[in-house]
Length: 258
Image (cartoon, rainbow, N blue to C red; front, side):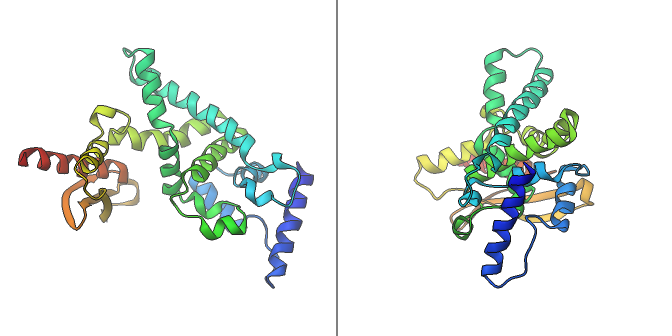
């Protein structure tokens, strides 16, 4: 594996020098420091995280496709499934397998993983082909969700299952559960979206209008609008719960008007 990364670095330096820029590492010391803050642990083996952040497109000049993040994506998917299943098993002791399976799927689906990747700023660390980079946007759900799974896989290899459990709870499970997004019948964002689509309205747009409180106890205020009209405002301990509360206010307002 070290040989593969050595070749990747040489290609990366050649690309950079062709643009008359100084040679750079795949990830800088500052990026590794920022990544440690995100995962919450000091990194032991940097190569795990480098591989987790390498998109297949970045390796277009190499034959060794196994240096991309796809193998770690496979591992991370299994870790995510296990940790989420374990959490739900204890949270809902009286629910059957069908309910638990449906809720787990709701938590670990592509959109949820991509949202979590956006929330932690994972896009800033991705190593992707320049052509893809030029067209890449935060809406690239598949790239972001795959990278999130790969990061979980890297964290598992580097720190173990307990560290993975803490990270997954913090950045994925807890925000979703607090916002009620794992329970389909109580997902007000979905209800509002369905209402807008059924009535041929513009899609709901959520915007953070205020952040207050200390860093460890932040309170977010979010407004939701349809077109130019603000139809709901909500607060929460994270953006997801604030958005859900704003959507709930909007749905309550809509139902009263009918």
